[in-house]
Image (cartoon, rainbow, N blue to C red):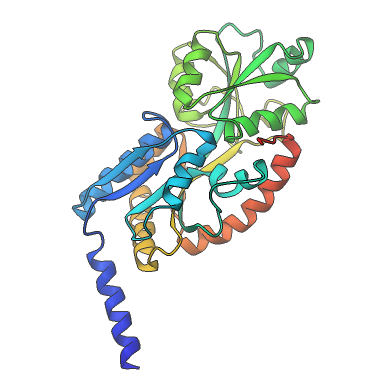
Length: 316
């Protein structure tokens, strides 16, 4: 009995003193995008609370696999974390026959930080003002329209592949980018026709007249761009393109460290000040516990299998 009490006391002391050195968070996207800005803002607040720096490392490419592999092979010491979307945690196992990491065995869930909805955007001179207009243009010009993705098999890619499947197997050509910013630049200069983009990244550009927004996923219009209707309002009630960003740690990371990272992150992102920041990025706060995130992942992986099958996407 005394031994158990000592262990509990040691674990509590461990959590209270953690972290004792800089914490690394690997982000599988280029610097300056919404996910990168989310982590850097959260990292600054954690720095203020801990007195320890949060170091953000950008490792984009290969549908988030490069970053996931890096963290999966990192020491499970509580000082290495991965910020990624559902691509890493749920989608990639159904997109690839082989992966250099196992999303179940190699990671321990930390927290689903935020959810996000995507907006369908087009170049400013594109002859479509609604999603149904886009469908008609694609049917009139099979194989001639192109769309942007943030990596093959990523959330943007699957959203468009699913859109194409649900609207009569539309033929549009994917153009893969390492980051959202690169795709949006080509939309603005009319080198790219259409793209699903994070609302926070695209809304200011639409307001400036540099591109057009056709519809947003989610049940309600987004406060950043209230003039753009939801897909339901645009006549596509069964279409959705939402995703999330979450933290995971290498398997074997001490549970008390994981719990502290989750709790401190959740406390920060649910403050009024940070919620306002999230709105500008197009995100909604979640901040669940490791247990809640783990339970969510079980359901999300079942849905991911259906989504990939419906899209017909395969990346081998």
